[in-house]
Length: 156
Image 1 (spheres, one colour):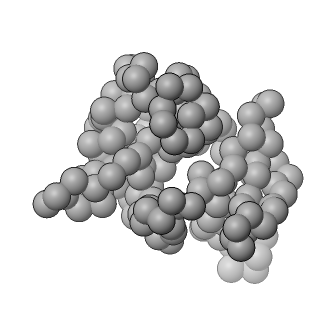
Image 2 (cartoon, rainbow, N blue to C red; image 1 turned 180 degrees about the vertical axis):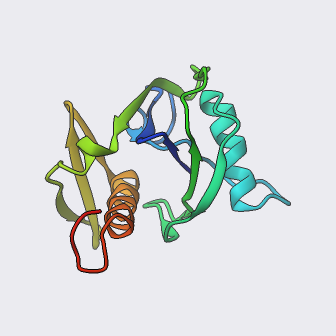
């Protein structure tokens, strides 16, 4: 799964309502790792297939997690300074949107326990970013905050 950082915004998709799982939910571009493929290669391929996002630089990984269906999800943070032309695949993506980090950092997330797992929700501009995507977003924002503090604990 790619976690696209484009400049100072994260790219999300709204999944197509026709998909058999997680239809209409907010997600990052992603899918299954194909045989012989690394998680980075899969993230780059899926980002290109789902939204036409190319020319990104892999920055690193967030913690692997399992989906409720038991799939191992390895989030790969990728970066591009500018927003390239995007080509959402209508079979998989209903909409693409950018969420400025400045706004996401101000969201007051809430959590619930579902099936013995903590699930984070980030209400943003009328959209609920939740589930695996919400949990990945929570970790990303924690890492971002940690990287943008001086050694005395204040923001840089």
